[in-house]
Length: 148
Image (spheres, rainbow, N blue to C red):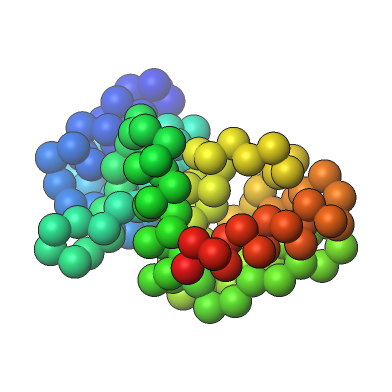
């Protein structure tokens, strides 16, 4: 069932400009799948979907099977357009985003597989990035700020 849902999600984002998890959930329900927002959030992470700026100026979900330079460029664009603040608190980097953008930014961060990062957690507008130590957290903040 999960693999069928994942296949349907990939089909939906390929054929539609999906900007939010609610839009994706609506399309899935219209296709006959039962899911919750939490399920969609996990599916987005499992499928390594990221948001990318389209030609129309709107963000949309795409698969993360792009080159590292594209991921780096996309992360810079996401950070620039979505992040309100970021700071290190010991070994945790706290990133505040515009509402609904944390998951997209977090997925883009995860796609980079940065050596300093142990793991990430995204809510609606906040991301916690666990780093190996406090000095790496400070370096990560500096690196991200350079991308903005």
